[in-house]
Structures are given as C-alpha cells and as structure tokens.
Image (tube, rainbow, N blue to C red):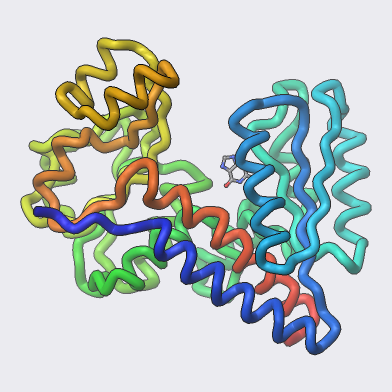
Length: 304
Ligand code: GUN
C-alpha cells in the first residue's frame, strides 16, 4: 500500500512555526503584513483569497484585502501596486491570478517590488532562484519541497521528473529540486516518448493542468508522486473514468455535481510508494508557504 503524504498535517506544522515566528517578531515591534489584491469576481479566486486572508488572521499577520472591480484599468492597478510598494505596514503583495483579459498582468507583476513579491513571480526573484541566491520562491513549488523533506523522502541524487513547464510551478519546482541535488528532467507537451521519460522518475511531479493525465504505465513502481493538479470534473463520463466504484467520491459527486481530480489518474497512485492526494496534498501547502514568505519578506526588508 502506498503511503499518503498528508498535506494538511505538514501545512499545520509550517503554520505553527510561522505563528511562533510572528510572536517573536511582535516582541521586536514588527507585525508582518500582506496585501491581497482580488480583481472582479472569479469564484475560485474568491475562495483562495478568503482562505489566505483568514490564515493571516489565524497566525497573527496583518492583512488587507483590496477588491477592485473587473472594469479596473492596468493604470489604476499600477498606481495601487505603487502605493503598496511604498507602505511600511505591507511586507507582501499578492495579486491573485487570473486577472481580467484587458489587464496587462505581466506589467503589473513586474511592478511589484521584488522585496514584497511573496508569490515569487517577479523576474528578479525568478533570476535569484535560478542563480541560487536567497529568494522568495513561488509558494506551490516551495510546498512541494517541504512535503518531500518533512516526509523524509530523499531528494539528493534522485531522478526527479517534472511534467509541466509553467513559470509558476514547473520551472521553479525543477530549479528547487536541482538545488536539492536531484537529477532533474522537465517534460512538456512536445516531449517525445513521455511515458519513457516519466518512468525514469524516482520523484514524479505532475503540474500539467490536465485531469488524470499521468496513467499507471507512466510511473515506475515505487516512485514518489507529487500531484500539483487541481481540476474540477463535472461530467459522468469523466467521473467514471477516474472514480468508478469509489463510494466516497460518488457521494460527493451526487451532492455537488462535481469533484476535484489532480493531474494523476488515481490508478497511477497505486504503483507508487508514496503520493500526495488531491484534494489534501500540495494545495494546502500553498497558503502555508505564502505565510512563510510574508514573514520572510518582513524580516529581509528589515535586515533581520
Ligand atoms: N492563482 C492560482 N494560484 C495562484 C498563486 O499561487 N498566486 C496567485 N497570485 N494567484 C494564483
């Protein structure tokens, strides 16, 4: 039976550590603060951002939620970011993605001060990460590393295969794994003989954004699987493809009309020695790492 890597337990551990650090900083008169910018009404984003703001409160961080309408211009958002950059009570700035189509997202993300870029999306921070300098690393990839380390899974010398090359997950995850001395391969939609490559993985990171894309024959028996995907499926056909005969999921599907599946087909987990479930795996680490990055930014900015 493969081991389930419990994201909730690891996230709780990290949040506990962050809360303790926040207490220590309070003794020095410092309260880390996060500004979350949520543009318009994207239901999934609203849930994510609400969780981020709530977690700040739980851990003792200051937070401010700013919710411009979806008619807001790039210029107005730029002015907002500029004012947040110059505020001393704000250590982290988070611009929730996706932004409306008419907004120039890259321009805005580049406008965030690298010192307050708690998402780790600024090219300066991407460059620092690449160069092996202390940086604010993107939260989800940082969470992947925390899960591996805190579960006692060796990384050094292992073959790590990352499927997906996004700037937010795939590329930084590969870089972090490389810094941990893994032998890293990045695969993507143009990779030839993909299954041949993924079968070399001791650690397989799935970050493609396609439901159940990794199938059992793509996994080396005994590999560790980290499933970064969060995909909602709402048709009976898709449901049966992934969860036929699973009573618990069946009940959830009947109740809500949809269920969440990762980028890994549930049958593929059975080939592994350990895996992160979806939900309940990597997703829970993202917010914990955002909190950790915000505290880190607060300390770095003050030279602590
Ligand atoms: N949208 C989906 N994931 C993320 C994330 O990690 N950060 C931000 N800012 N937006 C997101």
